[in-house]
Picture 1: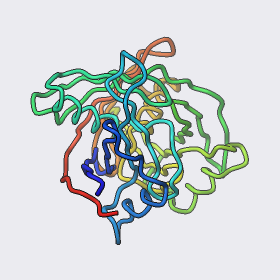
Picture 2: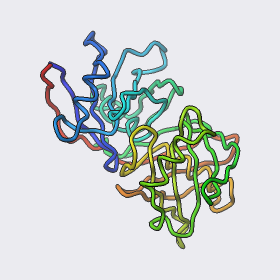
Picture 3: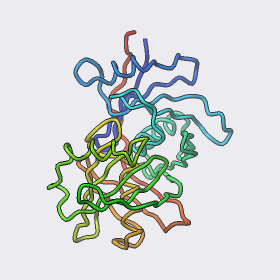
Length: 260
């Protein structure tokens, strides 16, 4: 049996399995089976918790796409969910999570641990590309993104163009794709095609990349609410020499055991 917890951040959902006490890490085959939405539990990403090798970290978080079984570098929504679990377990309001992208400092904004802030580190705003008639900005926030600002985000056929951009020859390791629209109140409406997953209801790192691109382009000064299909994240960034902070919900749905 594999004990698990199902959580989500704005509909971006996760199966979380704790392997810190010696439970075998689930195989890619098991991850795909558990992540299947018709015959399994269902999730966007599968999260494995491992002992932290760094003394400053509370846990090592391994992130795997449920659809293709490939490990990825970062996931902002999963980070908040794992942080909420650890805070409850350790009875404290701040934890440090290690990923292959680095150490992420997390803090609780509410006593019920349902609203979590994460210091996502310093984003790297990189080259620009024009693809399929859209001007895009590449941003690395621990994983790669390309952000396109458009006049009508709902008018973009994301299901058709998302996979073409993700798998473009410019990106040999593939890339996450965001289309975003500046709103009158300076919030940002964003939709996402996640690398290896497809359209998801929300993407924490995608929201961070979008805010960084918006600041770099001068659309906003240093912060904005990024509104996705699943809800809103508040993102702030002081500029190229500063860390970026993401705040949003973490919700536990249910827990159980998977029969091998």
